[in-house]
Image (cartoon, rainbow, N blue to C red; front, side, top):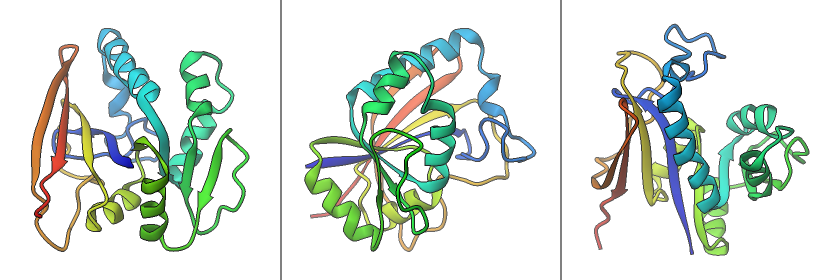
Length: 193
């Protein structure tokens, strides 16, 4: 059975909005403020995550963003991303052709993701896709959160964790320092039997 893993770059206060500065958010571009040494260490972690991933589950906006940057890029990392099956949650996209191994999950998201978890053996990675993450979290479908935490506090912006119908308890399962400024925090939901 597959495991839904949400892997996000976030600020200390949980903002995930506009890390590359493409959206016009007043604090956008925060991702690009890493030093080269930290960026190289970050890239090693992310490449390994790509190697260890069985599939991607992403929203349409995130899919489009990644496809524009990775679909035709050369190199081992891009080759690996092309080879990963990508499942796009969208009510408007019908036949994604921008990026290899992409298909659309349409219909009831919860039902489709539950089927996907049963059919995939390994990690099903979710990047970006804020609204999708919110839906998955609300229905207790997320098995792990990997938060690459950047040393910024914005006080505003779109956060990874938004309003929920109930408290979501988590347990810390791993902490890993990346370079001299990032922390990779891994949490799993505490589920009651």
